[in-house]
Amino acid sequence: MEEQQKVTFLGLEEFEDGPWDIVILPIPFEMTTSWGEGTKDGPAACISASSQVELYDPLLPEELPCGMRMHTAEAWSSNAGTMMEQLDSIRDYAVKWMDGEQFPLFLGGEHGILPPLMQAATGHPSLGGDLSRLTLIQVDAHADLRDQLGGERFSHGTAVRRSLDAGIGHVVQIGTRALSKEEAEFSHKDERVETWYARDFMGVCDGPKGWAALKERISQIEGPVWLTFDVDGLDGSLVPDTGTPVPGGLSHWAAVEIIEDLFASSAEVIGADVNEIVPGEDRLTQFNAALIATKIMAAHVASRN
Image 1 (cartoon, rainbow, N blue to C red):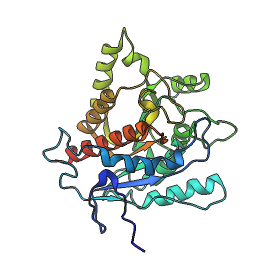
Image 2 (tube, rainbow, N blue to C red):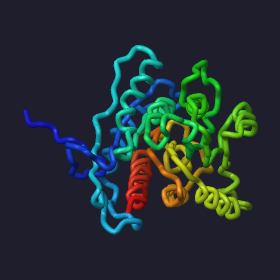
Image 3 (cartoon, one colour):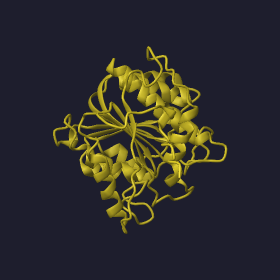
Image 4 (spheres, rainbow, N blue to C red):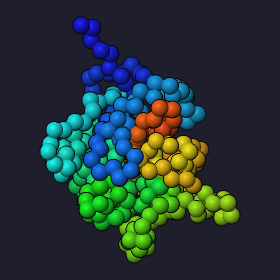
C-alpha cells in the first residue's frame, strides 16, 4: 500500500529531524463546547486550508519559511477517561516544546486547552519557573473569566480564570464584547486583568481614538508574553462556524496590526495558540484561522531578523 503523504502547514516541505525554528502543534480537543461543535476537527481543517494561503508577507524579505526550519508535529491524542486526565495529557504533550529552542504554535481545539498550555509554559527558560512573569495577550470575543460554566470549572468559558489560578501575572484582553456580570465585576476588581472592549476601539464614535490608545498600549508591553487567539475575536462574519460567533469583532486588518505591533514591541513572545477553530462547508472559518496562524509565524520570523 502506498504511504500517505504527510499534510504540513502551508503545504511546505519540512525537515523531519530537528532542531526546528517553528513547530505547529495540533490539539483536537473538544469536551466542553456549549453551542456549536466541531473543534476536534479544527486543527486538521486549518492545516488543510493553509495550503491555499500565500507565502509572501510584506514583513519578510523572502516567502515563508524565509530560511526557518519548520515542522508540523503529530497531533495530540488521548484515551484518558476523564477531562482532567485529558488536560494533564495536553500539558505533557506541550511541555517538551517549551524549552525555548523553537517557537511553538498550537492549533485548537476549544479554548479549554489554555490552562494546561500555561502550566507547560512554566518551564520556559524566560520564566525560570515563575509563571507570574508571563503576560497573556488574549484576543477573544469572550472574557473566559467565569469560575464555572455548566457546572464545570475547567471549560472553554473558564480558560483565562483557570490560567490566572495557575499563576500567570497579567492578562490583556482585546476584543471582548460578550461576558457575564460575574466576569465584568471580576475584570474590574482584579488588577491582573486589563480589558479592551471591542466597542471602545471598533465603535463608530470613539473607535479611532480607542484604536490609537490600544496600539500605544501594545507597543509598551515588555517581558515574556503568550498570545492566545480565539478566532471568535474576529467579527462573526469572518468565522461563521466557530462555536460562538459574535458580531462587532475585529476585522482581518485589525487582527493583523495587533499581531504585528505585538511582535514589534519589546515583548518576548514565547509561544501562541489559535483556538476554537470549527470547520465549515464554506471553508471560511478554517481559512481565516490559517491566515491568523500564518501572520503569527511571519511576525515571529520578522522579529528574529
